[in-house]
Image (cartoon, rainbow, N blue to C red; front, side, top):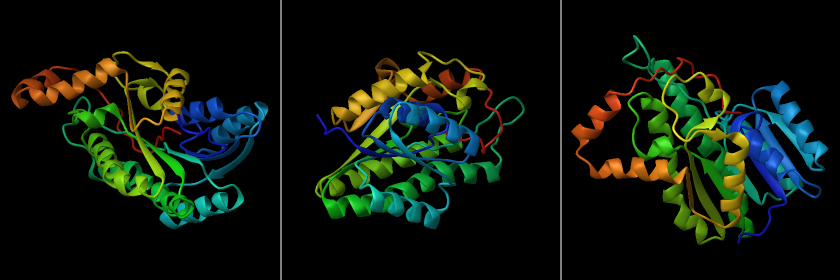
Amino acid sequence: MSPLPRSIVITGASSGIGRALAIAYAAPGIRLALAGRDEGRLDDAAAQCSAKGAAVRTEQIDIRDRDGMADWIRTVDDADPIDLAVAGAGVTAGLGLGRLRENPTIVRNVIATNLVGAINTIDPLAERMCMRGRGHIAVIGSIGALRGLPSCPAYSASKAGLHAYAESIRPSLASQGVAITIIAPGFVDTALNRDLVAPKPLMMSAERAAAIIRRRLERGEKVIAFPRLLALGLQLTRLLPARWTDLAFAGVHVDVPERADLYDD
């Protein structure tokens, strides 16, 4: 079991999984640093955490801002050395009726946010944690990273890239006493998924997802993919002929809203 974190950073904390995690961890003696882009929703999340006895600080920030992220994380760490950080901010986009290609600008925004933005969060954290020889970084990827989804090319690519990046740095960080965990949730009832027209097998609430993530982070798991049945099914598609899985996915009706500015925070 990992030690209970006392100083926690969460990006994407104003809605969805990030908000639910912040509230799940909030308690007397816990220091939370919450980041998001929507000031009103972020303040509301902070108020709920404060009501549970946590000491909370917030920052309205865009994770694509490399220098801004580094400055903020170092400021938080100077005040309260960070034990656990969850890189949870993200954005989605995809295809739908009449849209067979993604808007190139949206594609670049998705990748800049989900992949580069997460790296902007990880890098300054890893630097400080390695200096201390302890710490835990968790990245919220997606179960969709286990197999590229035809309805969400840029999203799938960004999350698969994040998984690969986290896997690649995990051994070197572990040698310095810093743990990395990849979180790969399936369908969670968040703002990002509510307007998605598609089958949503085994969808769960953000609160239930947060409970699963917290429990398995405390166990020190390296990969937290859930629901397990859905994760296993997507992994098994890798063993089938590509033409079979392509046909199967092509037969599923999906309509993803054309937007790339709605964060899961």
